Amino acid sequence: MALSPPVVGFDLDMTLIDSRPGIGAVYDALAAETGVYVDTALVTSRLGPPLPDELANWFPAAQVPAMVDRYRALYPTLGIAPTIALPGAVESLEAVRALGGSTVVVTSKYAPSALLHVEHLGLPVDDLVGNVYAAGKGPALAERGAIVYVGDHVADIAAARAARTVSVAVASGPFAADALRAAGADVVLEDLTEFPGWLKSHAEA
Image (cartoon, rainbow, N blue to C red; front, side, top):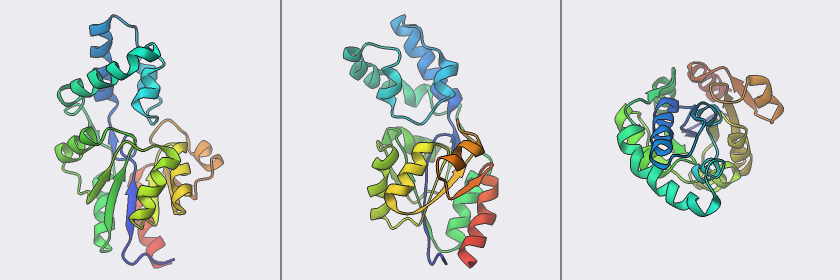
């Protein structure tokens, strides 16, 4: 199906950006402040689910809302600078624009934090929606007419399904290519360096 013009959705963490160093720094600071042990390596190995879900693995339920607030307060100072764009991220966003299309980041990340990343790295993103996860991303994608959603997590495949759009999965996050295929991705790429070529072929199909 030709894309004319395409609206393409992208996940953020471990799809467009490698936020593990920044997120790890924030969790380390939170652990130091509270005296609560957090296995930062484990946390950063499974990025994707919403922040409250991860914090609930380390703090009692009654403390999670306060920890969410503190994490988000620390994030602009500790989480942004160490984060880098993943290989192919800028080129993939620009490939959509080259077809006359637009891009939207749809992420479970807190929207103000996500926007800080986009601005800091100069990513050419046209729109951004935060605080949505898995199938909950579907309405945001559908409302914008997205015809592709690119993500690294099995939850991103569920998002594409909910939006009735093409699921492109990249094996740059916690799931290997075989696991992404098994979860039902329509297309599996090793990373975003392969996306511009795939998009061009898809647009010409």
